[in-house]
Image (tube, rainbow, N blue to C red; front, side, top):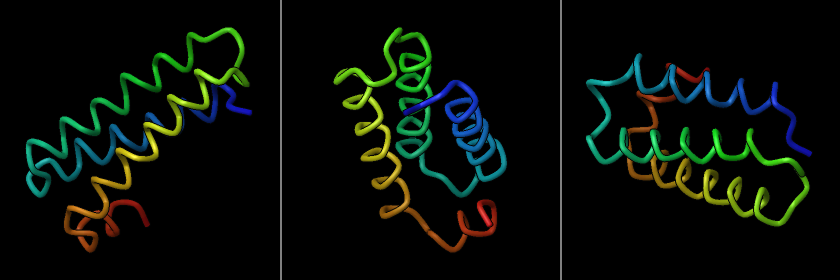
Length: 82
């Protein structure tokens, strides 16, 4: 379901958002994105990628990313993402 390469690419994207748009993100948004990185590191260390705990962690990451995207200035993030 979630392979290491996919997780690594997501982590790279999150790190890119943090570093490239640091001035346009609030401290709370940066903190939330760093929480996502922590959760994703946990997913990489889980033995069974299909376990309920893995799915729960990925669900948490999605919720956090939605909070950041919906609370922030999407136009600024869009320039970085697309």
